Length: 131
Image 1 (cartoon, rainbow, N blue to C red):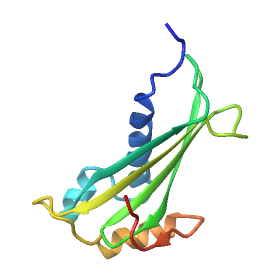
Image 2 (image 1 turned 90 degrees about the vertical axis):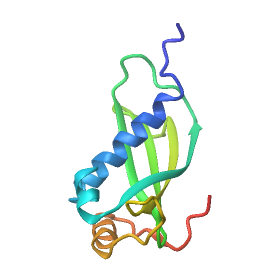
Image 3 (image 1 turned 135 degrees about the vertical axis):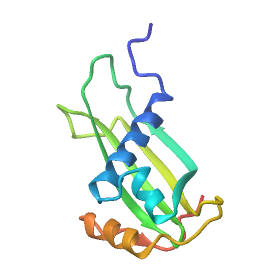
Image 4 (image 1 turned 30 degrees about the vertical axis):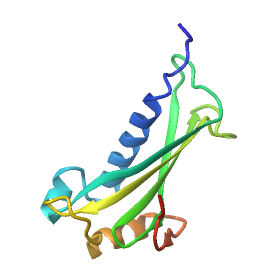
């Protein structure tokens, strides 16, 4: 036993962060997305490991929309020990693509775009997110 968090679990933590983000902007997943006739699919996920979280660490997981494209959104996540936010343990990037019910890419609905922009303290960059 290594007594550290298994590397793959950090993507789960990032996903939970995104789910809570959607709830915070007033569009809970999945019901709020379904009401708008959309879904969000992960197109790209990257994780950069700086240090391991240890067994029983309490983590602070912070996420924001760093870039907002027509149909994509780059969600940046940083994870810290709750008692030490001086440096992140892990940084992750999830690139979501907004799709319709047939899974075809579509533009983020205007009300979603406005909620994302209004929620952020740092305005997301605009344009293609790459990946």
